[in-house]
Amino acid sequence: MSYVRDFLGWAKEKNPNEPEFLQAVTEVAETLEPVFERHPEWAEDRVLERLSEPERAVSFRVSWLDDSQRVRVNRGYRVQFSSAIGPYKGGMRFHPTVNLSVLKFLGFEQIFKNSLTGQAIGGGKGGSDFDPKGKSESEVMRFCQALMCELWRHLGPDTDVPAGDIGVGSREVGFMYGMDKKLRNAWTGVFTGKDPASGGSLIRPEATGYGVVYFASEMMEAHGESLEGKRCVVSGSGNVAQYTVEKLIEIGAKPVTMSDSGGFIHDPDGITREKLDWVKELKNERRGRISEYAEKYKGMEYTETGGDSGVTGPWELECYGVFPCATQNELDEKSAKRMVESGVRLVAEGANMPSTNEAIKVMQDAGVLFGPAKAANAGGVAVSALEMAQNSQRQAWTREVVDARLQDIMKRIFGACCEAAEKYGKKEDYLSGANIAGFEKVAQAMRFQGVL
Ligand code: NDP
Ligand code: 2IT
Image 1 (tube, rainbow, N blue to C red):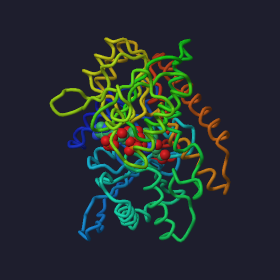
Image 2 (cartoon, rainbow, N blue to C red):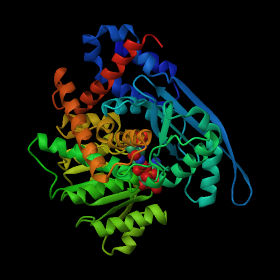
Image 3 (spheres, rainbow, N blue to C red):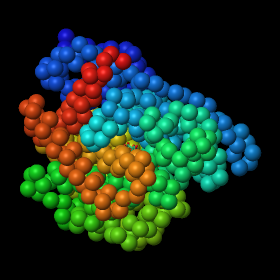
Image 4 (cartoon, rainbow, N blue to C red):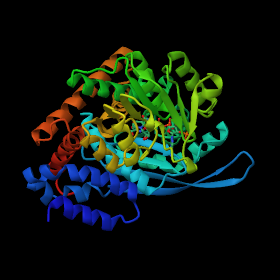
């Protein structure tokens, strides 16, 4: 029995009710087979068993009063996965579907993503089943403050530094960071994604989406191709999707779709800068639905997803590039098959684990260039680490400096994926390359530090 198969059996037994977590663990572990053949010492160290067990996970009650003075109760979490190479680092997600399995998959992915950035950041994730949709601003503030009354004691600039994720943007980060600062009685900059006036880094809001397009451009360039003039399908309409679309427009590609949990719009001539500005206002200020795009701009199609329609996203449209930027498992095997049939060339994952493991196999077998999430969307956390660096220096870098650092980091991540894939005879398999390159540094650090 191989170490990896042995480990996966153990992990399944140990986490029977955590499908998302097991999916992420399986995807990583299966690509590491050749690594353990070459490094039996890491198998003896039981590195996978140790890495798949969070160093610490806290779950806590969050009680708060809504606007009608009704008592509400939510569950808050922080999963501190690995501090082998730096303080725990990863976002907070507020969404009704948040549970331990979802946060463990996100925290596990974050270990390898953060390692790939080349910066000193460990892996963590947190969040709550709180749904910000339909809540007033003061309800969101009271909830964030109530959550921080517990969470702050687990954080610290050298211990654990959260940021945003689904349902947590600049507004929520501001409320959480403010309460942390008050309770700690210290300006530590312990969240990233802060507003610049409170120590936030320029380019952090843009970083994930811009980074996805920088990574996709690296994949294209390596094949003598480019995204210029190419039709691209984007899902989501939140932070990552907005800045993916913005950078696609900037490089001359043609993004034609955006979506939310209700459905997607299709703009065959391409979403323009002006229309994107309107979407930003719709989503970030008015917090409206993407269906309004088809009311505002005549002649646009809006397609509902979910329910009995069988449509899961904009995956049936003919296009060259696909950028899933909404949520996990939004792209399944059936959709992947249809995309392959219609000739898609490149997929770059903006969301975390947006493709099922079966969908990835279909795409890779068909020779689609596949940029896995932990590499393609690492630009966000990379600029978070730059925010930490600026805070500890008490300095603020210009947009140009941060953007140049981001571009350089994405180039290096692509290089690291290629190099690791090639080293193990998996040329152009960027998924294996990302997992191996991310893993090797962490495994080396764990061996150096002894059995912990
Ligand atoms: P936002 O909350 O800003 O946007 C999320 C988008 O995804 C919205 O359009 C939302 O639609 C849609 N969405 C959320 N849940 C679902 C669902 N269950 N089904 C269909 N659509 C859904 O989040 P982000 O843009 O920050 O995050 C998007 C993805 O990118 C996530 O996977 C996140 O983990 C990942 N990511 C984020 C980073 C960041 O820096 N923010 C960094 C790296 C990865 P609706 O409004 O209808 O819910
Ligand atoms: O998934 C992710 O990388 C994030 N949500 C960003 C994490 C961060 O700490 O910036």
